[in-house]
Length: 451
Image (tube, rainbow, N blue to C red; front, side, top):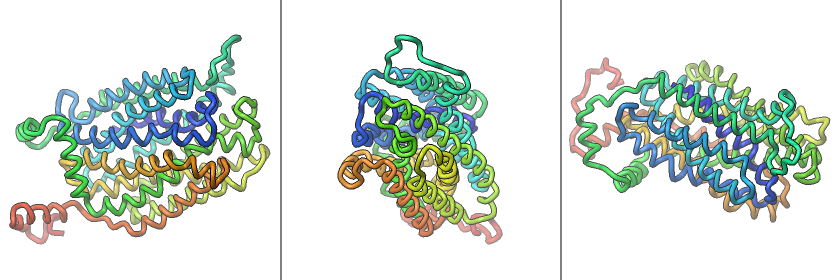
């Protein structure tokens, strides 16, 4: 059921490792990059809760979530083919909007898909399996430009004056094929369970049609957000501020700070970009293997403690990048990004495993979409404001920006300690008392509900 995430990560992995470089190939300045990345968080803010709410109220031949997997995969694959052929910064930014919206259409229902199909005791394993496939997909996606150059000896044809290197273009084409193929595999091989009372589900759906009802459902869910979700929100805000700093500036920081490239036209710049892609490959390889470890740790340890330790590793990894100088020391970047890979494995699994047990089953999709708010809001703030920080406070020092990201991950590791897991049954009891003015029939003490 999680195999589709392998393909989705080709979209994210290629984007994260290459978009800042693509913008600079097309002439963007370092202080402009943050705003050019705003497509990613804004599309997530708009698309994910809407798709989540819509999928909660969908049932057809392909089920509840799978129609969205498939539609998003088709659109994403087309956008991946178009992206590296952009001839101007504005065109690349527009294609990024389309690509991110399409990826979000596929990705958001996958979180709810796992919660739909697995009982509480298997959800940590389910979300960790998603981390495993995300890591595996990103390993390949991040390394594709380097592989094109060094394994397949791909070189530009004479007279090819396009700004984006041919190795990057071919990598995006392969990513499009992988995205569509992996998602199609999940759609074709993983059936969904229909609602317990299908007739009642269809009747309720008919009573609340249209976008207005969807937006109303999102607003209602926001007001009734479970306590566990509110506490996790602060953790997510700090976490994704840190990650966004890395994604924005790590690749150009490697080219400029470690390889010493004078400008994007310097051959060292492309060499630095390809090395950064290899470092992302290391990060995601570590994510792949740590996902296996999380499967065992989540069953034996407190999930909050596991997540806090992993975030601390990521903080150390990003901060350490500032102490790596010169091409001869570039190998240490793999160690730094490997520590980030430990954090990334947990970020992709533990918050969702903690959250899933606190959500009403009939609203899992919309709440998983709303949870994305706390990922995209810090990214929007960074995209709108970080250019001023870069130009005024950090003086366009991209390495310093990456280290600031490490500071945010350290803050997130501390905030996790204040999260408390609360099962949804408690909130359901409170809702029944409030709405019906009575307690439900009490069950005997030996039943799981009473426990």
